[in-house]
Image (cartoon, rainbow, N blue to C red; front, top):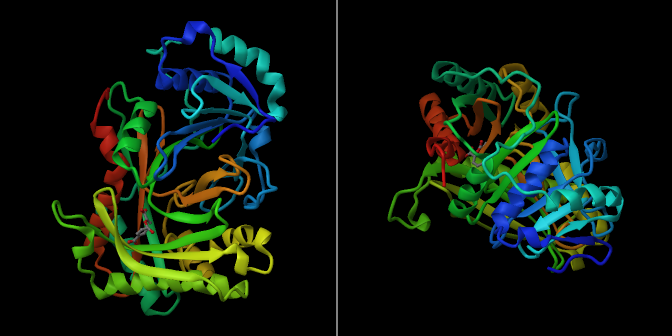
Length: 419
Ligand SMILES: C=C(O[C@@H]1C=C(C(=O)O)C=C[C@H]1O)C(=O)O
């Protein structure tokens, strides 16, 4: 996709001729981090290349509202917490500086960031230090408390009791776990590896002062507005391990999982109804693979041609959907109240949402639920995972499911100094 004509392209100097895309990317990331700027690196499902976006300052990245998903809205990368708070503010990183493998010869600078041109030009000519560790942003908050198996199983029992007493219909409990970082762990190398491992996920590495650094491989689209004029979302729920050599379509699902996923699909339909939208396509549920796991997924699609106010649809749906019943529960307020009271830790950006808005071109946005992610800390990683509960949930199985989900990014921590 060619860059917009309003962007100023800074060509790499001749001294960078021997550097490949990844070495150049590392250099731009190093420069952004040493000057304290927020950044997002991501690879969309099916895309051949990652993209890097750097915001000119932290102040320029604070936002109160969910992003507007229409072609007139500013371009940037949304990074939203599970629940907006002083501790976990919502960010929209403006697309001030971009680097993209589709245009490896130049770094693009937006008009709002013109004042960065002299220092960025100097930095591109500065010899990279490939062995120097990158100065990732870390959250100033302490690592969240981690729940051992017995505590998580107790939380599940409380969730099942809340369902039995009809306080909620569904609730998605979750937990955090910390793991030591292996010696020489490099988040950029881990990103590259995850991107290779998960071609159908949004693989992301986001680093923002105050919010910290988050690495993930999400299988779940929250809201997408596509170039061909469609709004898309999905109901993703139900989990089982993939069996080597067996096609996902061969998986058999228990009633519990079928019901759990159907609730999420119903929730999406109720959002369409609130917007008086009757003309949508619903396809599924079918079994899909996400790394080593299988999920049930129903895809929803709305043709903008069939909508009276198409410009507002993406924005309105996003506001209704987040947090979906795939990460919170149903009814929404009661489920969130339960989690507030019983979950016992701060989810921060886990089960929030993230993704590019109008970056590839005006009118193209793809927001994902921030799942299968970790938060990077100076000497450890915090892993997060949750499980949707129903009345039939078995505490031990739910614990095992969180262990499996943590493997998606957790496996990167077992790799040591990767190549
Ligand atoms: C909550 C998570 O995943 C969500 C919950 C699922 C479930 O309960 O089966 C499946 C997919 C996701 O919608 C997670 O990965 O942490």
